[in-house]
Image (tube, rainbow, N blue to C red):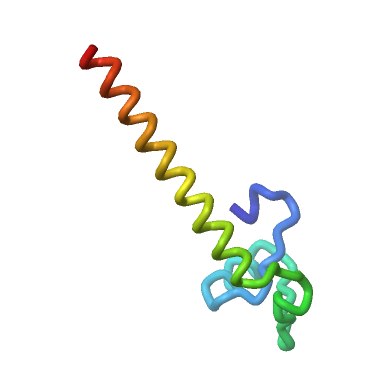
Length: 77
C-alpha cells in the first residue's frame, strides 16, 4: 500500500516494516516525542457530543418504527 502512494515513508515502523523500507530505500522518520492529538485538535465537550448522539439515535429509531409501520400497513391493505 505504501508503495502505491508513490511517496512512501515508513513512520515509526515496526521491525518488519523497517526492513522493507530499508530494502526499498524509503525514508524512515522516527518521532521520539509524540504530540498528543488533544493539544492540536479541539474537540467539543463530551456532554454535548453524547447528547447529540442520543438525540440522533432516538430520531433514527423513531423514523425506523414509522417506516416499518407504514410498510406493514401498505402490505396489509
